[in-house]
Length: 232
Image 1: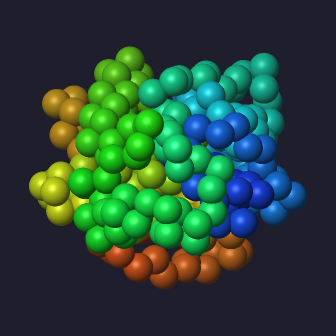
Image 2 (image 1 turned 180 degrees about the horizontal axis):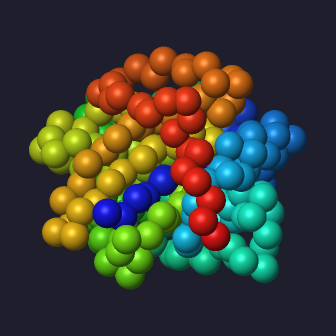
């Protein structure tokens, strides 16, 4: 069995200000760094065989903080371009409140029918879905039987959660995983996926699970979903 943890990076100034970030290379803000440290602490006793990250610095910094708990010399994050966020084109850097006025049809699609969303000058949601599925397939094929941690982005992870649910692409919801959340997937030798849980944030509240709307609820192991015995 192969285990994959998909982690969304910590908070940035763009997240806090309600901006469409896309591939703009924003750093973590002070709270985002604290979130990443809580992730690092939660995974500090876990078995992690390989750690991947998006090339954007908000993801890389989150991955580096997780790696520090294991020793960077043993667990250096590997950059993978396939994990990068959706390219928002002309939407990037703009506040969502502004975009609702300037690009009402695009924003309406984002909220009401994400599968139909196409960013002017950027990627479509279908582009992103196909990219992340191919990326995850490749990473799992390369690391069969291992525990994989990959730090990526909100739209990317939410898109993969929908794919793993087995529902038609056209039925994608507008649910979005939170900053520093963890989603866990299991793969057998035939690459059949089991999503154990999505958008988990127990590490943020000292063991208290925060209810997430929109995603199907999955049973999580107790007491800590990230505390697999460290065999590194």
